[in-house]
Image 1 (cartoon, helix red, strand yellow):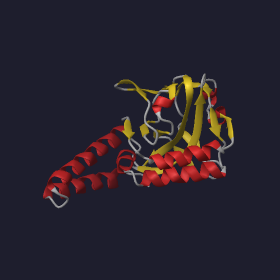
Image 2: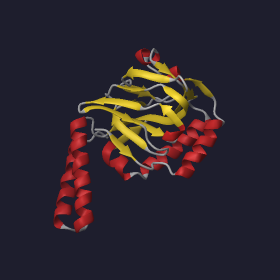
Image 3: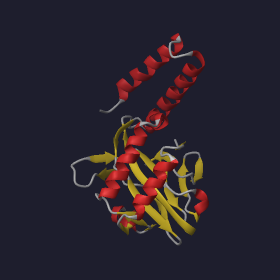
Image 4: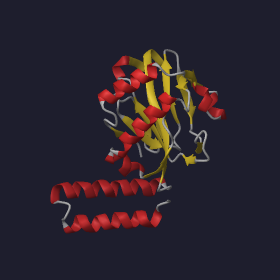
Length: 227
């Protein structure tokens, strides 16, 4: 399941993030790559555990909590603190798969990467290339979204970033451990939740079928969710 989530950050929040990132300390992006990914990765990244990274990471996490489409699709249990990368002309990231487990630096917390997330911080007309290309069961999709928008996709997917040929592409990226480990079940629950919301919008939250289906949804989560 690949889902694009619009306006996770407002344009004002994007502008603030861009200004803060201009002051940040950038290092070689291979610092967070796995053994295979290091060979394919060419970009820069904000150093982890810095005030700028923490501030902007909290901004994104707060925004995600106010994004019902993200909550419905991800059913998040843990979210890895957002990281920030930049691709300039000539940079790219070859085909790879994300590590299954990500330790949170400086803590004992480990996050299973059920879902990968890229939040775009640069408008698409400001750079050429730099598409996030994701391989899935239904084919290959290239993603290049407006600043403030985010794409959510399975962490198990092969994916790459095409080389940037003009300008620069700045993004936040992170991973989510879902309460629902199984991808097929998580997709079914998302479809059910979206159907309930559509029915409620047309017939009301107090409609008997809305109430019954909502009960089914929560009982399924109660049955299958990790906590």
